Image 1: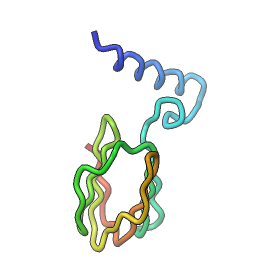
Image 2: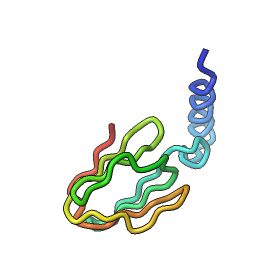
Image 3: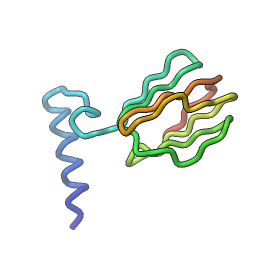
Length: 93
C-alpha cells in the first residue's frame, strides 16, 4: 500500500475543508505569471530540461512546461524559481 499517496490526499482534503491554500498545506506547486514576461514558481522539485525557448520544471505530481523566446532562469533556490523572457505558453502535464 502506498502511504505517500494517502498522506497527500489527506493533506489536500484538509486544505479544502479548512479553506487553506493547498500549496501551503500539501507542498503543491504555486505558479505566478506576471504578464507575459515573468513566471515565478514556488515548491518546485527541480529543472527537468532547459533551453532558451522551453523550460520543463518538476512540480512533483505534474510537469510545468514554459514555452517562449529568450527564456532565462533568473534565480532559483530550493523552494522557488524565477523565469523571465517572452513567455508564450505554460502547460501542465
